[in-house]
Length: 137
Ligand code: UDP
Ligand code: MG
Image 1 (cartoon, protein in one colour):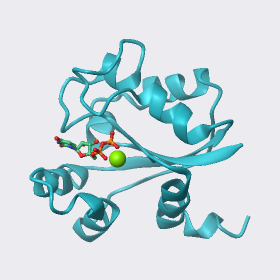
Image 2: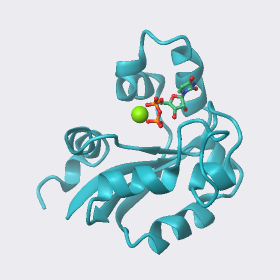
Image 3: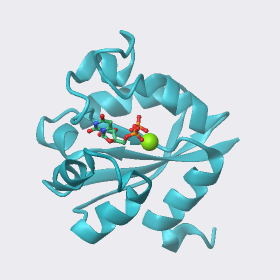
């Protein structure tokens, strides 16, 4: 069993897609074991996505991630990191399979509704970033 960090991005919250996204998560067998709504500061968004800081889309990405509240979640279950990546679908919704969150609920690569950690190591770092208070558990 492992844990992964999920973010329902500002577009998902704005468009009232959070309930539908949670249904994909719950149907996959993953458990939402923590979640909270918050607004990222520019500093937090830039720090969270620092690996992309040299990419051409970085400024737009930070602007988008700070454009409204997000819901950050910790998901728990068997192979949580790879399972969530699979149900999210490809980064580009146009490439994402039907039946995935991005394939069904998104159309634009820059507003693709969800974030999911890409490795167990990054999941642990990202969970600590948002849920430092839970590290004592
Ligand atoms: N992104 C973008 N344009 C691109 C590639 C990525 O706007 O050409 C954004 C998109 O929101 C993506 C995020 O940057 O989800 C992080 O990119 P990454 O390659 O890590 O994709 P992910 O892990 O989210 O699938
Ligand atoms: Mg990524």
